[in-house]
Length: 309
Image (cartoon, rainbow, N blue to C red; front, side, top):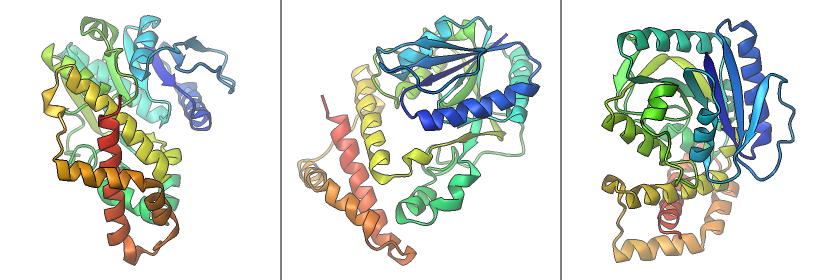
């Protein structure tokens, strides 16, 4: 049995699209399955779920705790974790599960990631402003490339073994998830709980595979706003510091006195700089200016998030 687990918090318009896409994908899905929605919020969901979707509440802790809660109540021997902004098609779901089952027969200690890109409707509008072009330039719109992996995947193979991992869309056996102890509940927000989970996999001899040619769609259209993007990076930096405190010294960030001084100035004037990017020099020929401003803002938000209490 396959247990599909989706933690969600707020973002209900985005999550509703995720639910609709999954419901459609499951119409032609012949494998025995269940869908578990984990509401990771104090407020009740305001959207109606399909009658066969199970809803459980986990309003303490972050997304790591919510994923653990979903796994705890899962009946399936195979778990598929999806983020609340992941759109999956019937073809990707079926092919992904087939690959996972076949690979598990060859190697019973493994997990399997999907590849991901933004949905097409985002590309139709993202290049119309400087921040959107910044996202495209640095590759925030896809899993492979400068922003996330800094590599191009070998598309000549149906699957590749890798040392990368993302929690947004992956298969894992429930027995493996239990063996490594799931996610670390100490992570308050989404971010470096992925890296901590990856290190657990590696330490326990669990191989990580990726399907380079089978995609899900990362529907982050609500994060195409510069301020929301920066706030997300602030929260991610907070979890990076948590990972350091838990012993991952590779993620340690250190700043000179001069850099701290400059980042604090940028932070103080952050709303001005955000307004400047959003409202001035929108033409593509000025991207070299706005990109540098966004880089500076990103550095300031990461610095503040990493050093927040």
